Image (cartoon, rainbow, N blue to C red):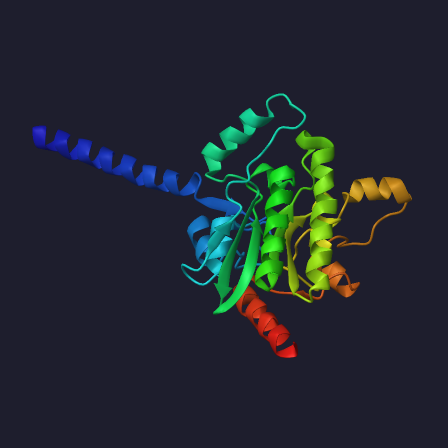
Length: 284
């Protein structure tokens, strides 16, 4: 009688454990691709460089994973780490929100810049991160990128910027908009020195970032199926009173119309960048 009860309890506990494992697998461990609508196991997605194995959609990457993928191991030396967010307009709740984001994401700002090696080729690398206020460009982002450009000029190195952004940061008003002019001016000096600038557009690259440094590359690359544009399709349609073409603002559409030079899959990005840097060195 007692043995039967023990067996019954053990059987019930096994069932609970099995169900718990199944539940754990379902909650937080799967992601739905908004392109092919397939459900993908997160671990498999991570192993595949956050690229959907079904349709090839490139999911967004954090700056940590991007740098790990692009820079040679242990070669990244950060630039401008001490340049942090400011609140020039005393925008209510802004700095509090920034501090909460820092604690949650372990990111200080929406871009990380540094000197690194890419297949043993020296370069200045800037990587924007959409996890921090959707990669929006404020004072600190503009200052960090400008410092990176100035470092590239000083050390005669090629510059690479991975762009992902929702545009200028509204909480900083005109100060954020001025970063468009600041970064563009710095890039004009880089160009005058005959140095290489490669802009890499990822999903999404929009607003003031698209209207400034993202579009000024000597060579402009993009990841597949990335959203690239200035204003949203609805705003454009309302302005020009016309229906936009299918696939408008996708990297494929922009390649076809000459806005970008090449679409590069994530697995090939590092070798492509290294090859371009070598060709530029040989050309000089």
